[in-house]
Amino acid sequence: MPKVSLALRVLCIAFLGLPASAQSWQSQVKRELDLMGHRNWILVVDSAYPEQVGPGIETIATNADQFEVVRTVLSSIKNSIHVRPVIFMDAELPFVSDQKAAGVSNYRTEITALLHDYKVTSRLHQSLIDEIAKDGEHYHVLILKTNLAIPYTSVFIHLDCKYWSADDERALRQAMRSHHSQ
View 1 (cartoon, one colour):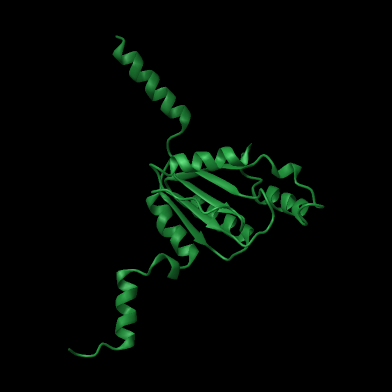
View 2 (cartoon, rainbow, N blue to C red; view 1 turned 120 degrees about the vertical axis):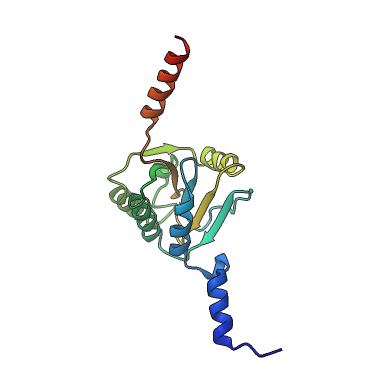
């Protein structure tokens, strides 16, 4: 059996696809966003966020700054042709004090500035985790863990269709009902 050079083995691995742990989180977001659509989720979470399990849930440790990850994800979504973000954050965040979590006031200021172009809905942390668990049974959920160590700072991004709104869907269903009742 001929010896295969190290360089050839590396090239073969590259062409066959690297395991998820060997790819950069940025390339994984790009690759996965192309496959995702409405009803999928991308979460950018702090370092203590639990590793959720479920058939559709995938967690990646980015070892990156949370603001960098949020910016990258939102930029990728903005540049897509098919999805738009619906953003949720923890309702507990406004009640966390600097005495209990140093830097939380600065974090709130920075995340508000970063998300200023988006409507952000506050929901209780556990209700969001429960929804992720439920949706992860049928849809893909990508969780990007960051190196942030401040509680209740997760950014939950529910993907929705960019080119078809909820109003468009309601109008379509109404037209269908009207047509069938004739």
